[in-house]
Image (cartoon, rainbow over the protein chains, first blue to last red):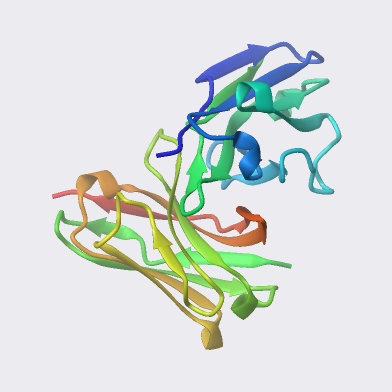
Length: 110
Length: 120
């Protein structure tokens, strides 16, 4: 089964830049698009990045996504961190049958 | 605007059954793949099942295959999840979501969820 692995948690200070990784267990992560979802406590997830690097219009350009085929991984980078960015972040892809989520990364902005 | 409203959650005993519903509005429901995603308390997101706009194809996660049945009523803009033989590990918030496809699928809009608790 295809597995996406994320760090359990990351923390950074306001105004700084943080990168969250998402590594595929097998195959080529670039074979299917990767999405990133933000989930604040008590709320449903929302999309911050879709199709590897595209942003919904309501998401600030401080959020960016990329793929590194050499390491079979995707990354979410958030620059100019704000306290409102504190949330859980999930990567998501597809293995041809199943939609797969990473385990989630808790971002703390302190 | 798009709205997805789940209902039907509650407390059920192990081995019991429950039927979740999701009322959709604000988009062409019959043209849209729909899905259920769950989240156990304090845990991550887990995809459960999805169904095409026409009702087929349908896919399930291995953890629910043979116990859960997804269906839809396009005339009523409604999505359903019939859950049988429930286990404690099925305890979770269940989200209904619309999907988009561009070579591969992704989640688009989400409901606020309905809580299912399986306990004796």
